[in-house]
Structure formats: C-alpha cells, structure tokens
Length: 552
Image (cartoon, rainbow, N blue to C red; front, side, top):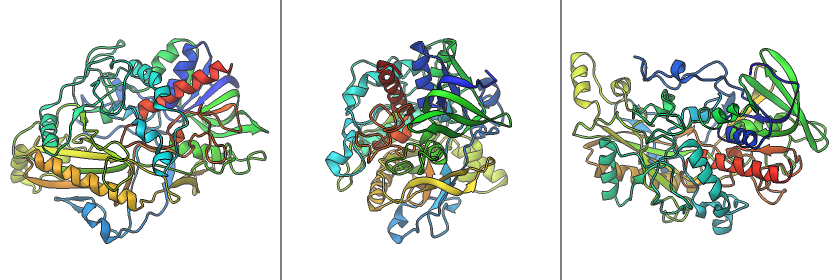
C-alpha cells in the first residue's frame, strides 16, 4: 500500500517487535489495521550484501532509516574505572578524553525495525527480575507474573521459529521450542570449554534463526551475517514473520516512509495522528492508536504531542514519560588464540551462560548479567576488521601476518542489568528535525552499582578468554567509558499506580484509554542481559487480547 487513508479504525505507529506482533494479532482476529512505519522497506535480495565483495559493510543505511536523536554531555571518567576502559592493542584507548564517549544508539528504522539487524536472540525474562522493587527496592515491579506471560512467549516462539535448548536454569516452560538448538561452531565450542573451566555452564542459545526449514523459510546457512541483514530469511525478523502473515490476511496495510509527528487528542481521547508522507503533512483519524516506536522515539512523540488537554505531553499525567531509561550495559574481551579456529564462521551468539543472570547472583551487586560469544557482535569476522584492529604493519609482512592470524580471534561479551536512575532519561532536546520538532535527547549516567556490575562482567569475560587458551588479550570494550546502546527500555513504564507509571498492565494509558503502547518503553525492569524482542512480542499480543476481550 502506497497511499494513506484519511481514517482508520486502528493505527499502529512502528513496525518492529511490538507493532508487527500487534498488527498480526489484530488482523488474525478479524480487525482491520493500518501500520505506519517512519523508515523504508528493506528487500533481502537487493539490500543485503553477504554474497557481494563488500559484504563486510554494516547494515545498509537508507534514506529515513535512522531516527533523529542527540545525546547529552556524558559524565566525567574517574580513576576508579581505569581498569575497565575500552582499548585496543593496535589502536590504543578508544576513549581519549576525560568524559564518557557517545558511541551511539544503534537501531534500524524500517519495516521490521531493529529486528532486521539483530542476531536473532529470543529470550524470556528471568522471573526473579520481574519484582526488582519488592525484592531490592530498585526499578519497578512488573504488574503481572511470569506465569501470566508464559503462554504468549510460547506463541511468539512458534510464530518466529525459535531454535533452542529446553534446559534454561531459571525460565520454566510449558512446551518445548519448535526447533532443535543449533550446534556450536568449532570456535564457539572452544569458548564454551573455556567458560566451563571458568566455572560457567554454557547452553545453546535460544535463537529466532531456523535450524530446520520452517514456515516456508529455509534453515540457516551459518554465514554469520545476521547483523548485516539476512538474505535467506531464515532469521525471524518481524518483516518475514508477523508482518508477512498479517499482510496476507488482507486486513493489514503497512505503509512505509510515514513519519508520525504528533498524536492528536481532545479531552481524554486520542483522535488521530499528524503525519508526514511524500513531502506532505496529513491528518489521519483513528479510533485506537497503538504506539510502538521504541523506548527513544515513543516518549519523543508523546512529549511532542502536548496540547491544551495534555500540557506536559500526551499520557504524561504522572510526569514519568521519558524517565527511567535503561540502556545496554556491555563488556567484551577479545583474545588471540594460537590455533586456527575459523572463528569468522558460524552463528553469532550460539551459546549463552545464564549463571549470573539472576538479580542476586553477583555477590555485592544488585542486577545480573549473562555471557556469550561475541566475534560477530565485536565485528571481528572479516579481513577488513582484522587488518585494521588485529594485525599491525603493512605490505608483504602485513599480508603474511593476516594469513597467519585470520580466524584465530575469540571474543566474549557480558550484557548486564540496567537499573533506572534520576540522571538517565529521554527529553525533548534543543535540536529540531526537518519538521521543526525537537528530537529526542538521551541522558545517560552510570552509578556506582552499574560500575560494580561492569567490573564483574569484565573480569568474568577475561577469565573465559584466558581459560579458552588465548595467548594474549588484544581488545576490550566497556560501557564504563562509552555510551553504546541497542537494547533500551523503561521510558513509558507500566504499572498499577497511575501516579508512578505511564500505562497499565495491558499497556494502555491510564488516562487516554484508546492509546496503547507496545514496545520496550513499558518494561519496568531490564532483566539481567536478556534480549527484549521476544518479550516485546509476547507483551503486545497479550495487550491486544485484553483489548479484544473488552470489545476494543
């Protein structure tokens, strides 16, 4: 569909994990829905480069495929974090100034959202992480239990085709994954043995990547290019799963390159949307609006929608819109192994160790973490990366060193809990977009607890690299000195108390009852390193079912 209607019964803003799954749920239940996506469509066979000489280039950037945002000045670095800073043997410190550096909010704006460039991790959240406020006095409790969301996780796993092990230490299951787990690559197996020597218990990761043909899609060919876009469509991105099936119902229209500028409202009801499409500003009337633009752009849209009946921003009666931002806390350690491992091959992140995932698993620290291979996520799978970050020199000696070294790098990553604090939030910034609207301005601050968690994560990564037989460490990266986020949460968190939350347990605004939010912004806590996509999908389907049960 290339044209915009003037009115639609249900409009979804955003086509990522939340918007796509909500669209499928509504369309499969007989409801007509219009999905508006600010970014373009991507076409696997045309846009992704795994079969081209320039395959090492990052995920393609198209016009409109990145959201506008700024990052506020970050905190000063202290000597206390000097042992967990980012550095490279070849290039030296990655952050040379005295303040934490901005490495960016990494995302894709397009049909399918950031699932287009994710590695396919499909996780549930640890039940213990859903009551962080009751147990530890931090973050906020989820307004329902793991048990209530469990059937929706099952459904999401079957819809996207998750391959995984049924032996998760914390998350009980009512049924098995639809597909068997992927086998470890040779290099990942070396890392897994190292993790075991370091006292961890790695298990096959649960991945929305097909280990067998499924849903008219082929199994994975293990090219390792998940983050650059999946040409085969074996990776369960939202465009080839939920949206493909939603559009086939004939009740779902997805229109790309439509930027929602504001939500229109009167008294206590959202009446429509002000959008930009093909160079024109248009209005669309709607009976129900589902906002699924992500934890950075969703609060921006709400705050830019301020008006007579919402002077502080739409759905911001509590003053919590944009607050409680939780970001990605990351450490990586990379080493050089003496043997040829072929570490450039295979699935990214094909095992994970959940030993420290629970919020009380790390001594003296609140909030957990998980550990997994990171050669692909560290972008160390191609010759260009090796030539610029691993092998020094030039000329014939450099070429020989490349031949001797390529495929010997091992990398491990830790991803940890992010807890909200008063200095980490999203607001409307000074900079404005081409329509004259303020862009999202991201504030990030790491407190002492975050630094303690990061130190444990880095020390554990180093132990795994050493136990795996690496002869030297050649690179490390840490959130301690660099803001670099993919997973973001919490800026419109859900809860039962309208004074301290933005939406209720169904994702609906406490005040504007025909407004539903269905993305990571509603998370009350982040979990101990779990990828949020599967949980966003489960939440969106649960919210739609609750709306349908109430007659929408």
